[in-house]
Structure formats: C-alpha cells, structure tokens
Length: 178
Image (cartoon, rainbow, N blue to C red):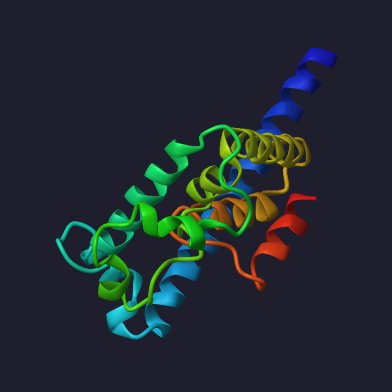
C-alpha cells in the first residue's frame, strides 16, 4: 500500500512540476511578445536578430568587442584585471578604430556578456565563484520547485549573455538568488 501511495504522490508532484514549467514558459513567451509589440521596429528583438549574421550592426560590434575582451582575459587568466578596469585595458586589444566607429569615444566599460566580463575582471577564480553561487541557487530552486523564480533567474542569465546587469535589474537577480 505504501509503495502505491508513494508512486501516486510522485506522479502528482511530477505533473505539478510540469504545469509550473509550462506556466513559466508561457509567461516568458508573453513577455517576448509584449516587448516585440511595444519596442520600435528598428530596435526590436526581431531586428537585432536579423543583424546577427551580417558584417555590420550588432554582430560586428559585439563580435569585435568580445574578441578584444577575450584577448584581454587571456593576458591575465587567473585573477583578471580587477573590478572596473576594463575601460583602462580594453584599448590595448581593441581593433583599430573600434571605439570611434561605435561612437563610444575611446573605450568600453562593460563586455556586454556577463561571464566574459567576470573573466576579464576576476579571472577563472571569479568565474568559478560565480558558477558556484549559481549552482547553489539552482539546487535550492529545484528543491523548492519555485518555477517563477527559477524562470526569472534563467531569463536574467540569458539576457546577460548579450548585455549586463544594471542598477535596476541586478539587485532583483541577487534577491531572487537568495
């Protein structure tokens, strides 16, 4: 009798987890659809995705920047260059004319890719610490089956593969991790 009850409860929990996951996916899809409806056509997600494989626009800009930041990170792989130093070291690895082409003056302050920015700032040691923090939070989310917080955390992480946390978003992310 106990084994049958355990099996029934396991199935009920599995269905509830599936419903939560589907709900989270539906919320994310609604958020993307809303953003597409509200954003001007030239900066919409669709427009940006359209420039990914061209020789101009988003792909060239980010690609050149990411290559330069990766070269800077390779120069000091263990501990990086330190917090908020990218602006000072970027120009040594940037392609000629990059900053004036992008209209940014002489340098960049952020890699527009959180893991890459952590690598150039804090090295492998910093990336490992960040990965440990994320893994600990993921274990907690899995145990508590909190799909909404897990989905919002995942959305922030995916966003930060192409951008960076701001004063408006990063505190919420770390609050959700807690």
